[in-house]
Length: 136
View 1 (cartoon, one colour):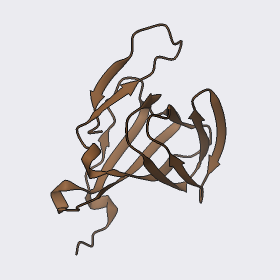
View 2 (cartoon, rainbow, N blue to C red):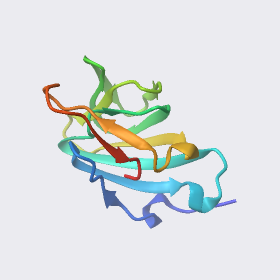
View 3 (cartoon, one colour):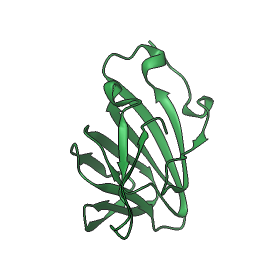
View 4 (cartoon, helix red, strand yellow):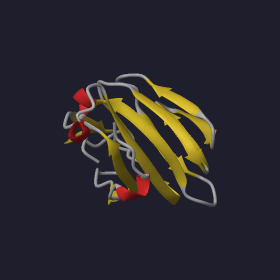
């Protein structure tokens, strides 16, 4: 068993191309010998966003604080504290903070997804796609 306050996990900037004002904490994962899932806590600053991207595994997300939008392919949906979100494998998605305080959410992914490639989708859709390992 592991019990710890989330703030004891180091917060790191998300360095993936297209990320603006986004930080992550890896709360539970391979280092904890968790056999199935990794749990991360994201914080997106006011006006910030995660990259618009997709990958071959699912996400489960719970919004802890703030307001924003999630982009699903070409549709935008409002999100707020208390919302639960399921993102299917290979679904293009992006989180945007449109509120007046940080947007915070928990995100669970399969442990098998750690270090797998994530494809970043260019905003105008004309540039080539880029890929990066899913570490942050």
